[in-house]
Image: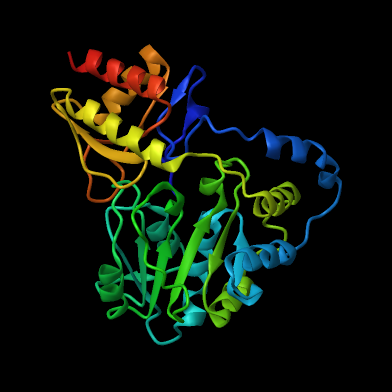
Length: 327
């Protein structure tokens, strides 16, 4: 695991607007907060070592068998469990290999390297982020099926599935596909770390065997159960994505800024001739605004940065601050 992800507000003491996280910062979580405040006594006891009760609730809500669902401490724990499980899933001399569709989230590669997997063009395991972070691109079913012809296991990270209106391929019933889902992203609760994996029972069982007991804490399990039961509607996704496109158009109107097309709420941009690090420092120090320096994504440069749309009035502040910097 490396430093340099988004939402590094802990490095600063004066951030008022956060565009570095791909999660909207303005959603109403009062219902969940009130529920958890009534259950704080849960911290006095150990949670379920493996959150089977929550897995059963999630499985029922998505029409699957509980044996096809594994709850994890965020999608990131699932990534490391899959990499750890690779030698069990694909035994053999030389060890398993992996492929990552780049540029994308760095933890796929970090996890594989931690557990000694070797990189290869047609790796045993292929990692696909869809919708992709940081580009906002959504791959269609034809692309995904092409990947399946070249790899023994396809891991599709759909953490941002709730932030797009582009159809995603539903391949979760295939035995050589596992899908990562993020309740952290869906319900805007990054501090709780909660996600789940869906896949074939035999693959899920291998992942479960590698998991640590009590990795999902009691409050996260309680939050997950409440969220599955109540399924609060936190966003008007159509309006939110229209705002994202408005933000992209406004940023593209600034000389020296170019923003790539996106199918999600976040977007990848370039700044020239200055660097993303210089822009980030200026925005944080002068305006209390945080953006994501995307230069540490493999395949990107010192000129790349990423922002996620927030409220229209906040987006206008961002555009104004960047316009001021470029002037």
